[in-house]
Image (tube, rainbow, N blue to C red; front, side, top):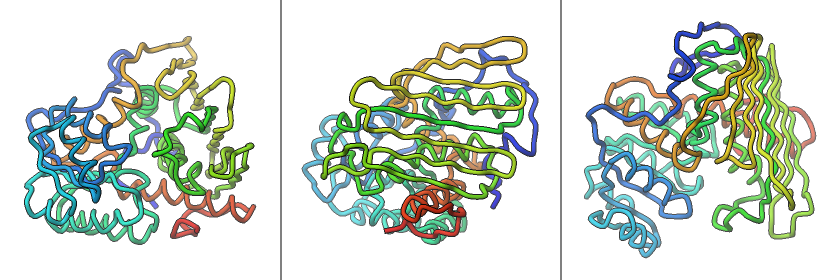
Length: 369
């Protein structure tokens, strides 16, 4: 399945490098004049990062909503004291004229909030993972398109400085057609705030969706042939999900692999290798916010000095890109339609981990229970 809302960057189209490496635009985009008003639904653990992004971009937040109104009030007082507070998102939609509704609730029940926001004529930024049902997600995409509205997904890893720089470099043909993308992360899951710890499939679904989305992005949007994945406990206590996961995604002319190890008790390592027919981009560091990027080219190596980190640029990037797309009335990078491709990889991986057999993307329409 092909989508026109992103540029193809490998395996089928070769692009020439038309920009100096110093000018690769990896930083979060900002609209030139449009200042969207935002309303936030869901004031849980990830909400402060959304609000910090709004504040950094200069986008006013008119309202905050959570079923636990006290949570909304605490964040309102901390970030946007003039904002209204609601415990019912429907009341908020009726009372608030924000152009963008930022939906940061858990996946369960989020689809109805998105639908109501779109029916109310609002653009929507959905927290990831987008949906737990591909067909429901497609309904939302088609609803947004029929109403001329933008529906984006907060896949914030795309705007982490090292991933954003690598993506733009690949799009400009720096390393030629991409044939391989490999991601390996070692960290101590116990350091993850308890409010971010999720379901049985946390490592492949709630966290892993970042890497499936990145794999699809770097592999140029080609349709994957199959996904093979497995998980293991990794000495996890009974109250924790599996802490080890690996997935191999096979493409017609390439391969992507993901290794996630949340059982690293001493030390940490996070690295990415993107291999093209004309070069390689390597990014490595102790964690997602501290990375050194090196591009290995036929003429030598290049190591850009990047600013920012995942937690700041990631959230500013998804929101800023949506605002620019609204301002310019164009298709937007990070749209929900293309994100369904990433979810199809993720669902196939979860199914494979449960059955022990390879699985074809799009053959699993719902997140396996």
